[in-house]
Image (tube, rainbow, N blue to C red; front, side):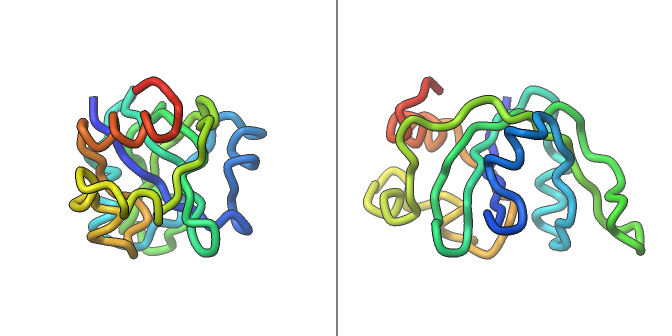
Length: 137
């Protein structure tokens, strides 16, 4: 199993929106590296749902339920999407500021590649953040 982090502007698509929908495609990614990250995903992989912009906070846990396929919003056919199922909210939202205080997370892709909307999370990083969030890894 692999782990990921999905960033969304809460004004455009929030954790609450995703929970209401249950399962929804993660479309609109227009960065090749983020798209390649989604190509690497397998059914059952887990991810953090991260509110970007002003909040900069991990707020929920999602699961990949459909692997990479063409993004219907891409008129040129270059990019794809995956389907994500909302699993549960975190008990303690984890901010980017919190993450930056933990030495074990200094190489987290969210910190190193802050502009990417979909980034990998290492197994040990996943465990550390889950502990901070008050959820089981």
